[in-house]
Amino acid sequence: MCGTCGCGEDNHVTYSIPGETGHHHGGGHHHHEHHDHKKSVSKEIQLEIDVLSQNNLKAERNRGYFEALNIWALNLVSSPGSGKTSLLEKTIKEMKKDLDFYIVEGDQQTSNDADRIKAAGAPVVQVNTGNGCHLDAEMVSIATKQLKPANGSVLFIENVGNLVCPSMFDLGERNRVVIISTTEGEDKPIKYPTMFQTAQVCIINKTDLLPYVDFDVEKAKEYASRVNKDLKFIEVSVKTGEGMDVWYNWLKENCK
Ligand SMILES: Nc1nc2c(ncn2[C@@H]2O[C@H](COP(=O)(O)OP(=O)(O)O)[C@@H](O)[C@H]2O)c(=O)[nH]1
Ligand SMILES: [Mg+2]
Image 1 (cartoon, rainbow, N blue to C red):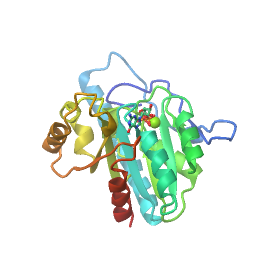
Image 2 (image 1 turned 120 degrees about the vertical axis):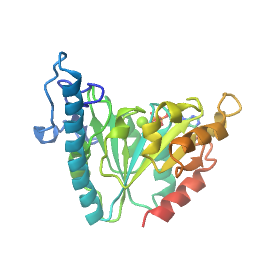
Image 3 (image 1 turned 120 degrees about the horizontal axis):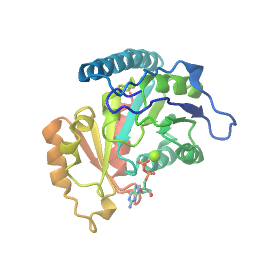
């Protein structure tokens, strides 16, 4: 469970591959602490530290596995609906001739996103987190074992749409990419700073909607730079394709 917001009580995580029947339950030792509503604040803090330090250990194991197989793992984080799956679909279609993509899809329910990714032409495992609001390193480890990414491939992990908890859970990724869309308001980076502090790249999506929404791109960048001065910005419209070449060039330059 997430020691920060209390999600995941009596949780039931499932793993599925589109087109294959039956759910996998991942070996059954996903960790659940007993939730006591009367516990003291200090116990809550201790639980949070325990959950996060256990996750960090598993994340380091994932990182070692990815490094050994020369797999580039990227963790895509954002609020729901900013365009993570759309970005992946287009990237797979337009870049699969250059890069070997594998995808882990995280959502609370449904395999809708995995179906979209499969149709776009990449191997995918869907993780349904139940009432969990983020992926953790163990889920990624179990999903990756099912996915079996090839040596030298690119592993995209689409996290559960949420700007808070995913920022605290290292999955063993090499890069974290945060996506913000022009319908969300430019102050998100200062309202949810951890997500922007822990990412290396910030994609600003849905630039095609800029004429219709009150979103100041320069202000959004300024806010995000305030919390992370090294953050790289890529402005795109996944819908029209504008700016996608910058994203593809970044992928090509950093995949080695
Ligand atoms: N106008 C516009 N809509 C987009 C763009 N990218 C994604 N969308 C739409 O935004 C919605 C959510 O996209 P999705 O990829 O499912 O977001 P996710 O929840 O972050 O995976 C869908 O209706 C997409 O068609 C874009 O660049 N422009
Ligand atoms: Mg999605």
